[in-house]
Length: 283
Image (cartoon, rainbow, N blue to C red):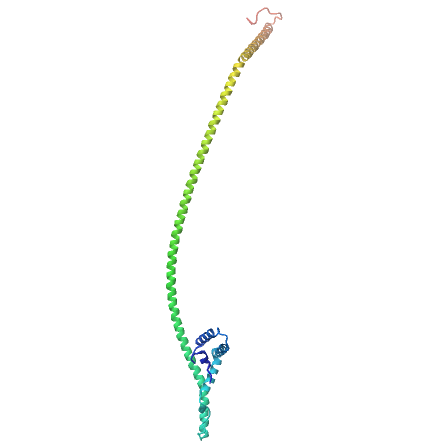
């Protein structure tokens, strides 16, 4: 009799799906590097065994077939030594019942073992998960503390950088203010120099103008004196003319007033003749 599918994969008959999968991967990893016929045949048979055993229904059918092949021939066929036909039929029915029950019991056993292994695996995985969660929590707490320390250090560094930047800005502002003050002082000094030069130039120009005017006056003084004398003579002549004119006007006014008094006197006395009296003296 050849090897069973379990023997081809080097696993027990109670192996679960993970063990079957792991065993097939090990065989495939071992035989895949070789290219001879025996390696290819072994790999194909292992692949066929994996396909059958990884399927639950096909595995149950194979377990039944494997159990039936392992039963002795005497249990399958009624012994010829039994004389009673009733006893032979009963034994045959018992054998058939055993053949039918064995795969079911084997499957139940395997399922129970698999369930137990899965429960243990889940329990171990839960324990590992709890341990991993605790470890992860401790690592997170440690990372949180490290992050807090890093953040505090980063904030301190940022504050120090900000303080340094602010100090540099203030120093730059002071330097700029000092340079601006120096520039303003230089501009003011240049402005004062320009004003002083301009004042000196204006003073020299004024002095030169005064000197020129004085020279001009010295040159024009005789002519001006003559012109002034002429103007004074003209003014005196004009005043004399005005005085004479006023005198003549006064005399004319006196004469007209005298004539008017004479007429009034003659009219008052009514003699109709010419009055010989002097109305200017005795009206």
